[in-house]
Length: 303
Image 1 (cartoon, rainbow, N blue to C red):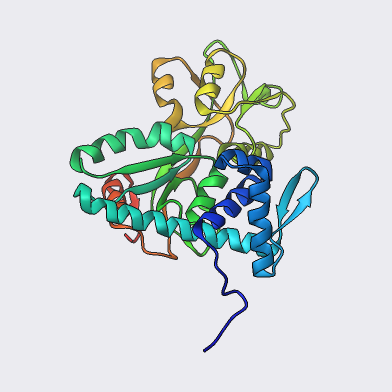
Image 2: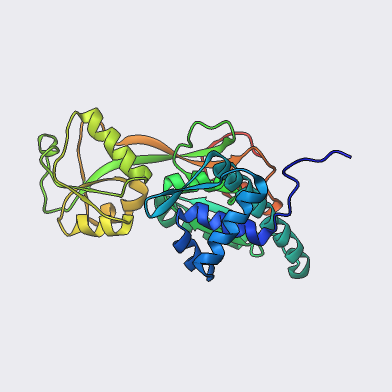
């Protein structure tokens, strides 16, 4: 009989407590999220460390940081709970007589302006399909796909990661918009007030690239936390913004916004349907991708 020092009794409940601490980087916030006491959370993490013989966390001021062992355990835990969720969905589908859920991650622009019409058509053709749409920042959707917590992501260009494969792509044009009353010439771009999304979003990163390509460093900037709020602030004349044409097409057609000419716009980017090649996607996710493909013009290999 072969034994190993890591053959310990790690229950799912204890692992879920540790994962909450890892995700929140805080014992107190994790305790509040789980609805249990801080001492109970601390005791759980301490007992795991003692049983594994590997440090999982270290104190960092008022919060905590994960050690190398903690990072690895958190990654395994996310995979484990993702597999468990899929297994429970599969079993529940036996009672419902329907396919398990397709868990889809999307950035805000896609969720608000690209997917709704497509989802309407998909629901007409597949009324029994259950779709869970998780809307998050660019960084978060790729993290969730890597952790298997979503089956499919619809977003901009995926990061260079051998686990990710783009199944199909669709044109995404990027333009600068302003209120009709504003008269912004190319020479005025550096002095204009720019409305930007928060750090960590794809649009914010693209804006930084755009400024660098133009050779400008706008000093008047406002950070606004949603695409819809940026659109309304631009309409109100608070500034100009670099946005996806998909998000302002209706306003441009109605004359509520105008496109600002620049030497390098429209920028041509792509929306991608991306899967994680590490594990086979569920039948529901495969059906969702197949239903989405007709709406994407440049199709790669279907999973």
